[in-house]
Length: 149
Image (cartoon, rainbow, N blue to C red; front, side, top):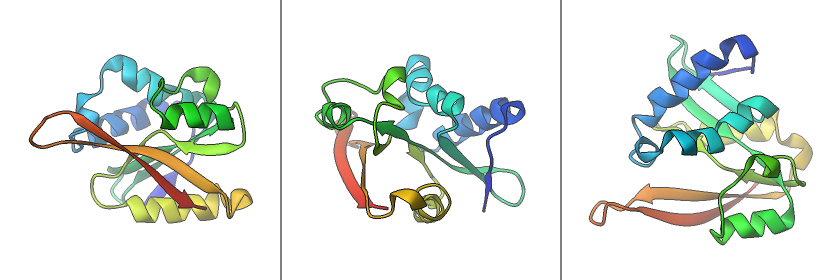
């Protein structure tokens, strides 16, 4: 698995890859265009993402991150509102809006990000709000997850 460095000429290709990955995630299949614009596009604009392909150029994973203030992080974790464009560089706390790794590459992605991107933040606690679609109820169940860099 190799990480593709951001390049504006490749953004359309990578966005297409993210859409392909989303087809293998019951949660991400439910996203509206507006949700994609809110949760993915700022990462491309700010170069706060990592996109992964296999040796054949097929997408295998995507992750993005925002550097949010403590108050915004608390608001997001409390589900009081969603992440907006102005939040993405509002502070020093790492928040992971999206991790799409439907083929089991999540641990590899986290390891790569720790080594290649987040090394200066070693020891910091990072958070994300994981969602999954409840099989019986058919709606998204949110769960806050913390991990250390």
